[in-house]
Image: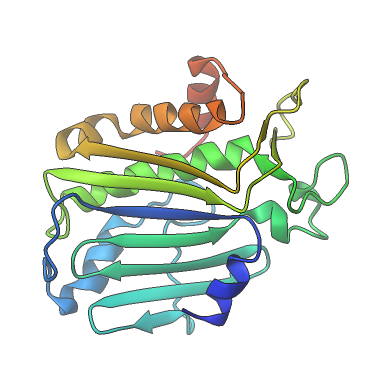
Length: 227
C-alpha cells in the first residue's frame, strides 16, 4: 500500500491481474524477477506496459518487486511476484485529464464520467500480449489466468477517444461500481492468438456497457498499434 495506490483508488481505475493458474510461491528466484519482467514488457504505443520508471519508481518486498509512476495523468502501480503473479493498477486517464485537450470530450473535462473505447481496446490488447510473453518465461505456465477489473465506474459512459472516428449516437453506460472479466487461456492460444483473444475480451467489456461493435471495427482500430 502507498499514497499513490490510495490516490488511484479514489477515482476510476483498472486492476489487471495476470498469473499462472497453478500457484507456486517460489516459481522463479527473486534475483530473476527484474530480468524476467524486462523480457515481457509490451511496447505497442507511446507508453510501455508495464511502465518501468527508472528514476526512483522502483519498490521491493520479500517476494516481489514493484514500480510506481505518478506523472501527469499517468497514475500507475504494479507488483511482480516470485509466484509469477503480476498485478497492475492504473488510473483511468480521463479522471486525471483536467487541462489536457486530447483527453476531453467536446472540450469539457470528462473525469468520472467517460471511458475511451480506443484506450480500453489498446489496454486489453496490451494485457493479452503481456500474458503471452509471460507465459513462455520461467514465471509462466501452460495455462494462464487473466483478470481485468474496472473499478469506480458506476454511471460511466463510453466515448470515442480518437479524433479520426465519429462519435457515438447513443449513451452506452455501466451501472455498477465494478466491471469484472476473467479468462483462462493456454500458452499455445496466447502465443498464436493474443490479438484475437484481446478483441474478444474487449467486446465482452463493451457489451456490459450495451455497445456491440462489429468485430471488424475493433480489429481495424487494434491494427493501429505497432506490432
